[in-house]
Length: 244
Image (cartoon, rainbow, N blue to C red; front, side, top):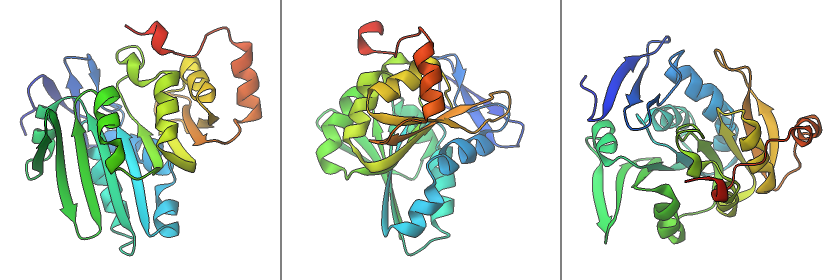
């Protein structure tokens, strides 16, 4: 398999593949296991199986389509619950990455806005292309509120605009009450940004060399112990005023 332009293909420790982005100088997944990381941080972190068994139509948002692994794993899980329809919306900056991962998808365009779509009997995938801070608001009126969000953007250090208090507040406005957001990051500034934006923040599962991750619930109270630790730390929440 040949990598898309600007990327290098990497086989991770669980045998699944990921890509290293030259633009961000980071991999799309942990090299300790792309598939296992995806299952732990996103499918389990957002309790997707529970959502699929509880609702007749589940709406999920992924911030960072990457190789499409989040979609593939979620689709496979949803096919175990064929009575539920899955709508999976993903955001991706790099259109060449989308065409590499989804060669059979249909491309649509409205003015300068582009999305790719694939339809299945009990699922629909829509990948919105471009800068998420402008493309998601453009399509907002065509989307339902989300049950869960995979926050899988490149790291706050490399891609800070998708980790700020303002961004998380906007994601909250698109979420159902009690919606879950899950991310690999355990950064103090990111946890503070989520809390400041109105998300209840909780410690998440460890994976490989990372001892923790972060889970959040919209409009719920944060874990008391974690909140006390955050309040002791001088690091401020990441904000748009601090990003380039």
